[in-house]
Amino acid sequence: MIHGMGYRYRLHRPDLPGKPDLVFPARRKIIMVHGCFWHGHDDPGCAVGRRQPKSNLDYWLPKLARNRARDAASQASLRCMGWEILTVWECELRDSEALRQRISDFLRPI
Image (cartoon, rainbow, N blue to C red; front, side):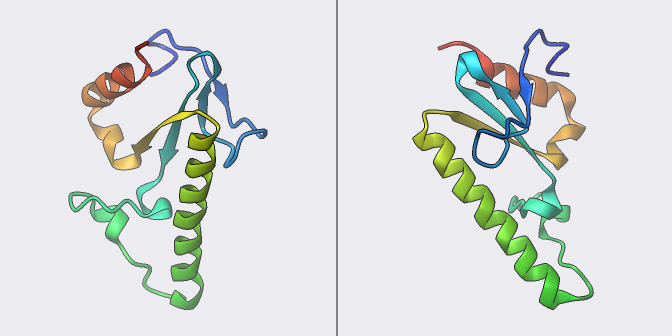
């Protein structure tokens, strides 16, 4: 979708904290695409993000907490480096027009 909108980007740059999903170097902007379950989407309207694992909780609950902590640390580092960040959640992919507008607003030059 983003490429079709005319934007060019780099994928998973290993030199940046957290290897961000889509990097727009000239704009100093990053889009992170998060799975609701894996990254702990806390929106009340997102059932997947609030779902708890049913088995092996001693493994999964700390694992998911580490994912959230790692995301927060990576984003804080990126912001300190001067990057702007947009997080796109898996559940937002269903409404492509709203997502397209949100991305366009984020990438639009100031």
